[in-house]
Length: 423
Image (cartoon, rainbow, N blue to C red; front, side, top):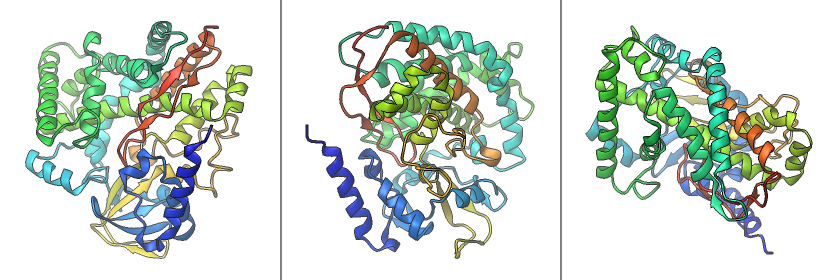
């Protein structure tokens, strides 16, 4: 069989090296859809790691691609603020935001407000609560896997990745399980531009997200008048630093919790099946030794990098890599590139489930904005794979995935698979 992906890779490499380095712009969703951004990041790390890019769609920004530089930006919230938002926003999207008004969340705040609000919701994903949730996640993972067809093709994203993460998120919000499908739908609504995912137009996106906010305002009103409980809405409604928040801020925090609780885990669950199929020797190794599951989970989180970047705004002039980043400039930390930095990760393009330090990756970020739900993400991935190994000797890829049209969410729209037999 002719492997078209080899041609695509060669073409991507040729394209990345054809332009002068100063003309490179990795902020192109099409590159991510084709999984063709790797050579450009490789070249930027080697030749211009702190790179001033000018994008037609996103405007000018600094592209930071090496591990140590990304760490320097991420762990210095004084010089690199989140207050202007944590993603590179397209010019079209900025116009839309100006019309609608911004919806701030604690990830796009600086201390002290950031710390107070984060502290309000963090008990939901604290180790003690995860111990309580683990049996429930295991039971649901089993139910999801036991419903899967044997010997016929189906979409892993739809039937497994979305299902497990939606069930877990519904529990965290105390949202009705029978309506859990709304949570990944709303997440996709927030992260996609018109013409991609479920988004048809800016107007439809606005309407759907207004419905989402109205629904959660109703839940807030119920819970603020009830005794405090352990779900996220109740925590926000009763928390001293969040109970008086404006509606727009509540909406922003909901967006953060829905996207954070859904996209990252869902795309890593899909990514694990894809990676193991692309590296069959590692799949054999996992079958031979299921105790490698936790290390495989961390390696998948690195290899997949479910959020490709985070953005900041410089609050002062900063010297980095021989360049001067000016106060007010947008700075993009490409986690997806940092996780493949040859100077920090041995053989970084390889997927190896027995690395000595598998948790050495930057997919969760660093500093004050490090992913609050990182342990929950690892827990869901570990449990689903423990349950998969009990049931299915192999899950086979039935074709290439369709990837998310985004420079932010690095994920899968569909992943066709076949399970040949039960264990």
